[in-house]
Length: 95
Image 1 (spheres, rainbow, N blue to C red):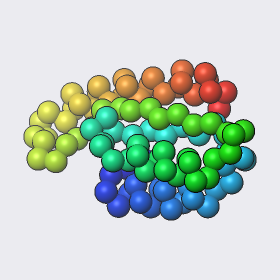
Image 2 (cartoon, rainbow, N blue to C red; image 1 turned 90 degrees about the vertical axis):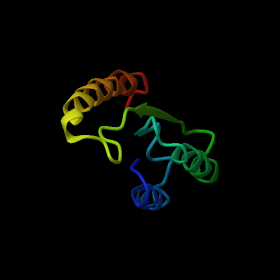
Image 3 (tube, helix red, strand yellow; image 1 turned 180 degrees about the vertical axis):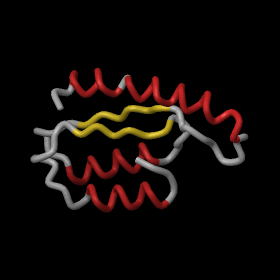
């Protein structure tokens, strides 16, 4: 989803979608994000009907604030491997 203002921008865009036309929805967010999932749940409660579904998939953040640039390569590798897990999740959801 993003962090900070990016989450607000994504939620604003999603608010204009007809959830009946876009189901199931897969939200991908950083595992260190503590507030976005609550916002997703609130959005889903407001917009979703009983006919639609969603899931949330968490992946490691590639880089944290003040993280050494030397350690980023290893975290990017881990992030990439965890992102690959999204593909089986998508096929389970019939996306």
